Amino acid sequence: MTTTNAVYLIPIPICEGENNTLSVAIADVLLKVNYFFVEDLRTARRFLKSMHPTIVIDNLHFSEIDKHTGADLNLMQQWLKKGYNIGIMSEAGCPGIADPGADLVAMAHKIGVRVVPLVGPNSIILALMASGLNGQSFCFVGYLPVKDPVVSKSIKDIELKSIKDAQTQIFIETPYRNDKLYSEIIKCCNNTTRLSIAQNISSPTEFIKTKTIAEWKKETLVLGKFPTVFLLLG
Amino acid sequence: MTTTNAVYLIPIPICEGENNTLSVAIADVLLKVNYFFVEDLRTARRFLKSMHPTIVIDNLHFSEIDKHTGADLNLMQQWLKKGYNIGIMSEAGCPGIADPGADLVAMAHKIGVRVVPLVGPNSIILALMASGLNGQSFCFVGYLPVKDPVVSKSIKDIELKSIKDAQTQIFIETPYRNDKLYSEIIKCCNNTTRLSIAQNISSPTEFIKTKTIAEWKKETLVLGKFPTVFLLLG
Picture 1 (cartoon, rainbow over the protein chains, first blue to last red):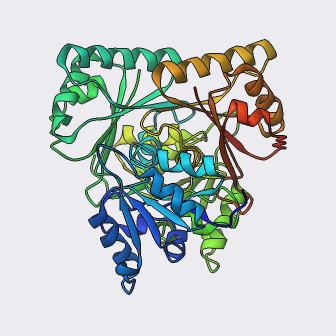
Picture 2 (picture 1 turned 180 degrees about the vertical axis):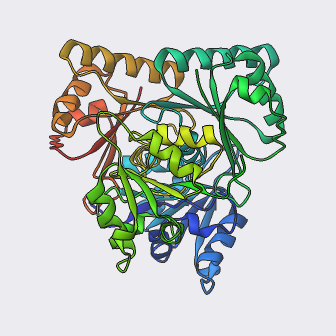
């Protein structure tokens, strides 16, 4: 099947309003797309308005990706087969990375429609760039297991893996558990292991620091409930 | 030490001239920086001229990151302590990710100077977004070992790991070996494993396709010597 339509993966700012963290190309692409799959409808509409204040939202078609049941893949298939350009937007950052969207993209590949990833903020890559840790080999493992003895075991496993493979290990946590996770890391890891903490990335309150565990132990750090990326290299 | 200067991690286009793949903020940041560590001097100068045609290159200070001995960390330390804003640019894409720069950033953290990562194209993240493979858990392993029985073993290991951890495995190859690596993957992997190939990312000749190994076997694919990212999920 040869089509001229495309699926555009459209990053939006991590911090609402910080549209200068988006690539220049995005504003133009948005004018070519009338059909959207979005993680959050209100965020998506506000974003589109912020990029193009005169845009008529009622002329656009949105399908919200359900938190539990996922995206409406039948609708995706219909829209693709009708030759529509389709945009996918998550609630913050890049769709499909630690966010929904991958199953929609997989459907586009299955049907043979071109997929175009656009450049925008991704907290994992920004944190890694800014960490000074190894960017030649790295692993994003998502969330760590929650329960207590399991957490400390998985932190130790991750530290061990980072040493064995000389590979930066990257993980996140539900914000209200940041401080608990931080104290577990400080408790479990070797003093020489480097830990990078990147909080509120690409916002005016961005905080990014890399220190050894021994150095962190000398600080009083309160992370609070802000989105945080943890990076570790033993 | 409290300073007001910063180290800016400045992405440049992956494909020369495609400046609309950069975030809007970069043009302004460049006007604040007079001291640069760069992977390639000529690329850096051409890029700066393309962003600001009236810029006076002779007023800027450049230190090239040596391919063998790395960056001049003593000079970095001097510049940081003098309170200069410093920019780090690789030859393409984001500094510090599969590219030099991390040791300079580590020095900034050591001295306590703020590190600011800017948004730009990164072929690993763009390929992952566009692959439709798992973006909740992924691993970039860099280059695979070169020698023959070793290559097939490491491909099998990577496939196994992707199955065990439900984790997308991402790797690259020196372009002239692309086709050899591709044929090895096709030979070694399970028919149901999904392989995504992303070539010339963020350029006008961008090619991104995801298929199962069984489906790839039916194609005649010649990758040639273009930069390619491979993504695999068994």
